[in-house]
Length: 312
Image (cartoon, rainbow, N blue to C red; front, side, top):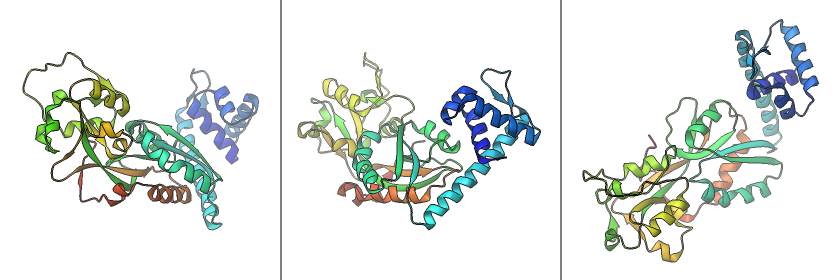
């Protein structure tokens, strides 16, 4: 029994297809199939039901796969420990990030990180929060940057910064006459929101009051990005809620359509998050250090004393 064989069966479990798993492992399908057959003969257990399409683990195979994942995790952890002892920061790191942070956070630190740590192969993917949680728990990504708190078992959150919110109004909106805005001023029926699945949708909803008046908008629209929300508000009626990093990218003209909240400023907590299979501590630490060093001064000054908006 070898680690290579364990890697092969885990690849088949992920892909549910021998050919695709062989491609993922950079071997031929006959080679992969032969090694899995040898493992099954050694253990005297049939791991996969090959009559099914897609391929499925047998009941006993599921137990074998569970232990195989533990063995591979321990092997990877030992390798990472050795790197740490040598003071080496290298290897692949798969990072997830939510769409409302990706356009603003990634440009802050990614180039500096890969230049400073050239031996790290960084792979970055955009996912919504629920998908990131699932991938972390399955060990399919190494870490993530997203809004917290998540209150999820086996998920570790390391807060990075607290990002203030402001209100972005349409050019002729009545509330632009006010210097600051109170939450009670914001009517949900005027709000432009991100579609379901975005944590910022929930945060924006928590800042608005529900109107008892009959809905009078004849256009219903939910955006997939903050850039779309900004453009819709500029050409329509109403408002949207924007975080600080999105505000920084606005033109001076568009910034005149912003208003701060009165009193205690609402913020979102942004954290570096890892799952139960986290074992690349040296890379995680290096990435957090670079990211924090690249933050705008305004975010560095923000503290946990601000009002944190839960995504739940």
